[in-house]
Structures are given as structure tokens and as C-alpha cells.
Image (tube, rainbow, N blue to C red):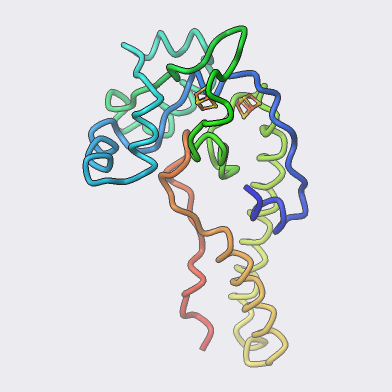
Length: 196
Ligand code: SF4
Ligand code: SF4
């Protein structure tokens, strides 16, 4: 999150500790994919299964946060039946997180990316919208530069392109290591070879 906050100069809001993300979580990987990751020793996947237990069906999760469930299913509309929602075994409605000081890294990192599907009540919701707008603008600037091939021969424009690509590279992230992440997120590759 820090890299997004720094890149776009959008200070991170403070978590409201409402618990919605603890009670309505879903990774972008299916249960089977995540399970295989855990079996292969992936730390995120192992931590995830160490704290989260699955809801029996989507309707149970809908009772916690309908809009998150519906948006996550829409993002996975080709295989919604494979999407599982989870609740944390350590969340208590009055005490909140009962292992707060020992919570795993994935909780400390959440939401990790503005492309994660957040509840409208989440403290990060507005922040994420602003980050996404700024990111889109950055991508548009890059597209604009790409269209100016002649100017690209000019060193100044090349340098501007390199700067844009460098900023985008900082945001390139591990696509599944965040709950609710939208799989269609497309990061322009800083390794793009259009600068000759
Ligand atoms: S460990 Fe704590 S912070 Fe992490 S999901 Fe569970 S209740 Fe939430
Ligand atoms: S949903 Fe947002 S505000 Fe609520 S606990 Fe999670 S990160 Fe914090």
C-alpha cells in the first residue's frame, strides 16, 4: 500500500477496524489453487488457511457484505461456483481481532492494492478510488507518449517515458497476494520494448 500512497502522494487512511475484511474475505485464487500453493509451501497461502474458514455458501457471506460478494462474483463471472468466501476464526464481534499483535503478514498488508474489492464502508475505499484514477491517468499519459513516436526520438521525451515506466514498475505487484483482488488488473510492463 505504501508504494501506492507514495507514488500518487495519497496518504493512507487509518483502518476503522470494522472487521468487514476479516469476515468476508476471498482471494483471487480458487480454493483448489490456493490449497495447492499452501501445499507447495507458499507462506501467504499457508497463513490464509491458518486463520480463515470457508462459508458454506455465498449467501452466508452475503449477510456480512453483500456488495463485496456480488462484485467479487462478477469479477469471476466465468467460474463463480469456484469462488469461496471466508471468515477469520480469530474475529470476535466485541473484542475484534483476538490475535492482533500476532496477526499474520497478510492482515498487516491489507488491502495491499487499490484494486482489491473493498466494502464501501472500508476506510480505504475512497483512497483506493483515487489511486485507481491516478493510475489510469498515468497509463493514459504513457499511451499518449507512445502515440508520439516522432517526438520519442527526442531524448527529453524518451526520458519522460522512462520516468513513467519506472513509476508503473513500482506498482507491479504479485497478483494474488491480496484478498479480493480483481484478476483483470493490467499493469503496463516496464519491460515494454516500444522505446527503441
Ligand atoms: S487475524 Fe485478526 S486482522 Fe487478521 S483477519 Fe483475523 S481478525 Fe482480522
Ligand atoms: S474493512 Fe477496511 S476499515 Fe474495516 S477493518 Fe478492514 S481494512 Fe479496516
